[in-house]
Figure 1: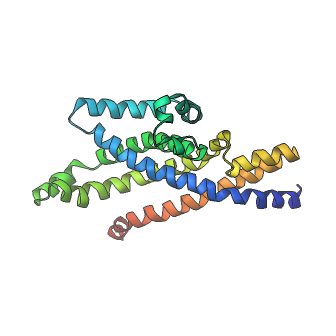
Figure 2: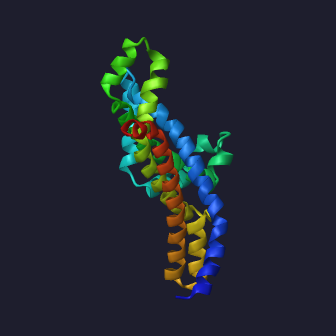
Figure 3: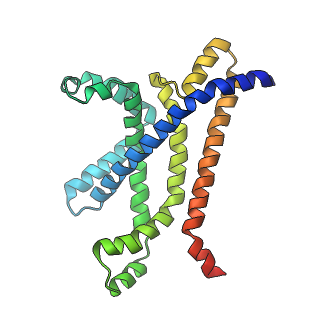
Amino acid sequence: MDWPFLMDVLHQLLPGLPLTLQLVGLSLSIGFLLAVLVATAAASRFSPMRWIASAHVELFRGTPLLVQIFLIYYGLGQITPLRQSFLWPFLREPYWCAILALAFNTSAYTAEIIRGAVQSVPAGEIEAARACGMSGFLLRRRITWPVALRQGLPVYGSEVILMIKATSLASIITLTEVTGIAHKLISSTYRALEVFVVTGGIYLALNFLISFALSLAERRLHAHLADRNV
């Protein structure tokens, strides 16, 4: 193993890490807001809202993320009214196209995580809260949302890790994040094995840190249960 070369590759890949983190942070933030809207629509009493939410989830969960990136990056430019709108200065940039595709994709999965987490709240706890006089927003803030958060966080943690790995697809549309830089190094050095070993190591370290942080958050949310068992 050529350790000096591996260290050189690492130094050249690290400048792409901030862009990777930007893609992850923005896509997850936007995707979570969209997911809340989709999950709310899915629980609506109005059938058209439920149909729209279901179509969104099925569309973005049922098609490959790579295809979604291509459709957004290459397809939006084929829509003449969109090219003439105020959105075009953003949507013609690969950076925003990648974020849009990643956000739409994660919103579909996150909406299902939210829906499942809310449905997992025991009916007995809700009935007990209502018996104590809670209703509406107070019931959601004190009972539904805290319990749903504890139930959904482990699953959402897996979605975060998947999104970190999914950012590597942004290199397909010319973004020079970690994987994009790796492709350039391979084309200039022809040493794919070493470059991809270092690239995989960066993603592995990043996902390990995220998993550790989520584990701490999960432990904190369940601290009252541990105290109860003592």
